[in-house]
Amino acid sequence: MAQISAKDVKELREKTGAGMMDCKKALKESDGDMAKAMEWLRQKGIASAGKKEGRVAAEGLVGSYIHTGGRVGVLVEVNCETDFVARREEFQELVRNVAMQVAACPNVEYVRVDDIPADFVAKEKEVEMGREDLASKPENIREKIVEGRIAKRLKELALLEQPYIRDQNITVDELVKQTVAQLGENIQVRRFVRFVLGEGIEKGGCDFATEVAQAGGKV
View (cartoon, helix red, strand yellow):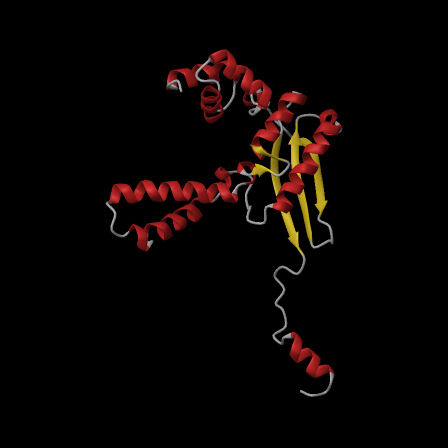
């Protein structure tokens, strides 16, 4: 496999507007071939999407998804630049799919890794640094291991980092970027809320057997 230099990544980023990690991945997938990497990014809908991220997206939709049985419900806000795009079937389908993704990922709490509070990250690092399996390792090694564990943990909490439930080969972030490339507007998942039936309600203390006994007048 060809060596991927920082210079190549920078050049591809400047040509396509895609993110650094996306450019690096494209070059790896294309064995360092710049033209093939650009084509790879276009096919994934990533090229040019990065250039649109700075544009204001204040229109869009609030979409919903209720899981079969009515035990889980999701509301999600996805923004775009114009009301015209908000009415497009492709955009509405994206909103529905993002809402469904939230319902399917009960551990997800934030839209993106950058949304996770710094105090939460600091607390997670403190916990990981105190793990027994790291006690005998040198400080610099412990730092690297903990850094890797924290990065993995944060990705598990971020919606955009999740594998898309309908195509495990892409993330939710890549799904959004594909729609950006298709519709030509900045699209951002802004926020979501998940409702789980009975969540937060303190259940009664007696078990089923006790309830039966009470109903029969034995307790």
